[in-house]
Length: 440
Image (cartoon, rainbow, N blue to C red; front, side):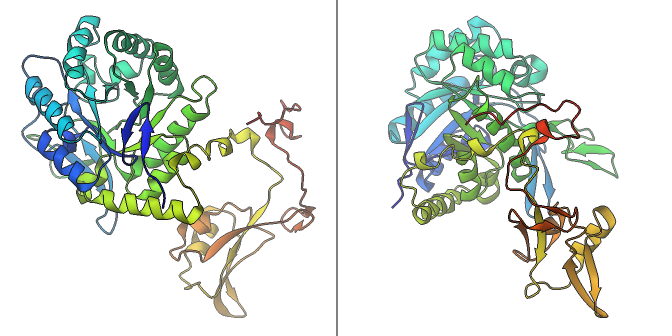
């Protein structure tokens, strides 16, 4: 049976599934319920400095994007960091850690970007016995306007500076949470590494407005007729998160830096994809808020079954396995040729593949044959874009089939070559030069 035990920068947990810093981890009651449900760890909702707590709005805090079946696709949040007293939080953290010594308990922190502020809060958190700290440099709303959150995370030099303070004034492992609201995610990651961070976590939420009420003309969620930008999360952000995780995992300057993957993780498969792209564990929020804490049961069972099926004994057996297959566009093999193929036994003749290809692509799918409704790919027009695969409502009805070397590509009239060739050497490239893909 697969062993799901996880060791992330020395923080041990029975499985790689942690709850992210968010409303589900705001207090002991929630965290205790989460641990009982089977979560391997939690990152406690972000603490601020001592004094009057942060004030949250007393109205709608969430906006949403739904699919046609009302399934939640994207989630917008305008809630700030914890609005509970610092001492109450610290007492609860200490008690929960005592009650659940085998679970990971990391504390998220956000205080003003001043050395004294960080120096003051770090020993208070350390005294709780927490396993580590996560520096919230990602929150894009409310706190960023006060010079915290993503306002820090968008400046690599600030990231490096604060990480250095935390490593100087605390013994705890430091996880630096990065904002996706930036042009190049590698730069703050490099700053965090220079500062001595033990790991990075990403992504935090994406700055967003999910909708506008067309009666009141107020962004949603609306507070007394007005709305604000918030943090976007949920399944819709997963592709963005996977890309950013992969960028850090394969960057020579951050290669080997432990990563906690966050962003749209809803199923065991989502988690496995993050791990394959280099994440050492994963953090979940929206799925728990949508389906409840017991959603982790399916994640644990599903991941374990898949690992058994594939022969992966431990998480290390496949963690990072996909990183070597991520490359820049210029290094993709231009001699690889594939064509779409429609399984006529599975086809329901809905015509979606045809209309998508006819109206917006390459006019490569016929709609009639021998006077009857019939959908078939014309290889002499197909460029292998796989739009038809994406829009087909029947799973596995349309597949992409690679042409073997030596076969004729009917569209170009050329024989498929078995050699590797990329844009850097292509004759149409004015800057062509004999460059090969970087070694793994």
